[in-house]
Image (cartoon, rainbow, N blue to C red; front, side):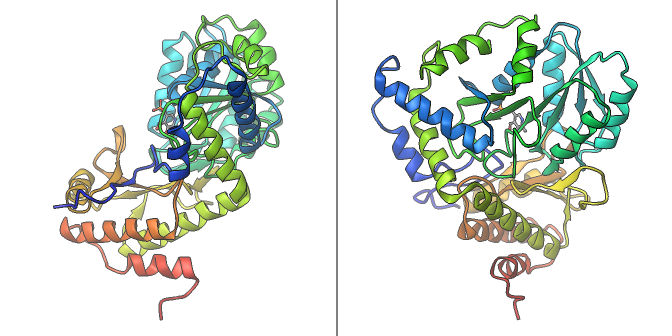
Length: 396
Ligand code: PLP
């Protein structure tokens, strides 16, 4: 049904649409990764990346997906049998915890309902009880991509400080960096984990760690096996602008361009743009009479609506995948699927990365049309509500 000659509408919460400026940068001829031009490229990328992570700390870039960056954070700082306090926020916190077990760590999970963020009060209580300091790290997913919930990282930091606990704070910013306000230094994070294919507007293929001085110190005594992920040789070669292995040169061309775009727009402006689109999306969902998966901020501790995506709950008896299939078939538009526990129960609207008002209204228009075609009970007027939110006019 859809017209194949136009560009596919990719409105999943990552990978996101890659802007033309970035695509053109990636399309440059590959250069010698041991030559002087490469060193200039890498040093500029490290500097700009630090600015976007809001840190003066060391950063490491891997040719990897986000999972590699998760693994790097764990194997560089921890030793076999170390306890890691994880917070169940959704599918991705669960995968990270499974990875920790596979590596020989002992993840201990604070249970969650997949509608709320990490609970700073529960973290503080658990850390206070850990008088022998067996817990070596607290791991939190900042923006839980499976649920559209943002955890309050400054409140988590405050919980560690209130408990006077020396655990490292590891934060997954895979779907928040470049979309949701994030500050590695100000928030006292020890390892920031991220990757390329979401707010950084690149194809998949780059994993990122930003590393505090405390995390670097922990790395000296960490005994988990590591080779490819070992920070130290990466940091040593990175100082000269080189990688210890063949780097993803063309993705780095793209990363330089994407970081420049974010810095040209201004990080506060980038965050405000995402906040605005998220508010308009929520206005549309409420007008449709559908439920947002994230609990209202204020009704659960440490819980905020995501500005990167909105997860929408289907009415009972209706399958989110049927709706997504109709929308893909009729409108050549991809929406995010519900994952594991919420499979078929929710669909996710991505509004992160290279995104403007027109993209948002196109996406919401397609969702509203799809709800009608799929016979999902709803009220019309979601797009009108979003327009009112975007333009500040109440749609008289
Ligand atoms: N963490 C979060 C929050 C994610 O959204 C994802 C993937 O979507 C991952 C981790 C895993 O990243 P990757 O699939 O790039 O390995």
